[in-house]
Image (cartoon, rainbow, N blue to C red; front, side):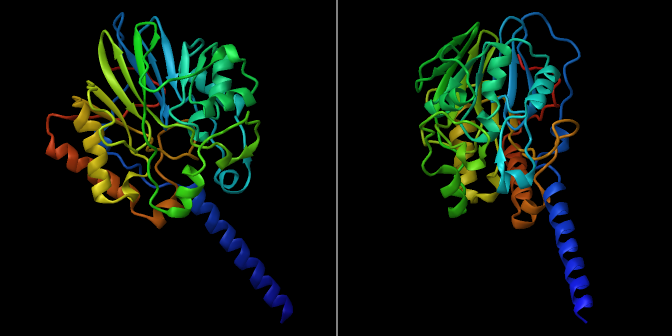
Length: 337
């Protein structure tokens, strides 16, 4: 009898382990319309401005003379490491990611805030490419913890423009997406500053928020806004217009309908773009190669986030038929201007 009980218990544990692995390592469809997908540009005219998208909000911009990057995040820690263990940059993944983006030298890498999926890899990206690491004091402390010299670290000032070749980049302090779950909000957003050099490996939540930025970018060819996290400050973008918005939509479907409408009003309607490119909608634990994947199945079972996000974006598109929504391919250059 005891042997049967032990065998049954072992089988139950194996079944639960297999189910947990399935829920954490498989993904649902992304919260974007496949009809929005564009291919990389077959030809790039001299002086054109291009973008390459790795995933989340890692974007590489170039006009053929100057190249710079947001975030520079290529590591993909597994779900168990994120939940229970310590994480650190995967230097081989960073090497491959830069190679796939055609990057050897960068003028700057600018994490949009200091969470791991934005800032963890940026100091190694800066070290390999000679880039300036731009961002908040918290991001600077991530760089210092990685041993990046102070000569490659620059703390930015709210609304003070930076010149990168012909690009003028203006950091605008914003808000991170506001998690509706109080426990998650407490861990991810409370006590936001990294006050000393952060030396990995460290726990996931040791990569604290720092400051969250929207970036307004002006170039002789056109202008754009990068809103990496689905948060906003009411009136924070007043006076800024953009031809194109890179719109962070991560978690948007888990918020209220009123929040989604306010977010759209304060970002898209405020800046009046002709095109919107959703970003930060792919899985944080999905592979760094191949098609983008949506959220892990475990998250999808806990909320209707993907369905609500896609429904909202389709509603906004239907309400503004002249507004074009696009999603980018992975790694391939796409001409935006």
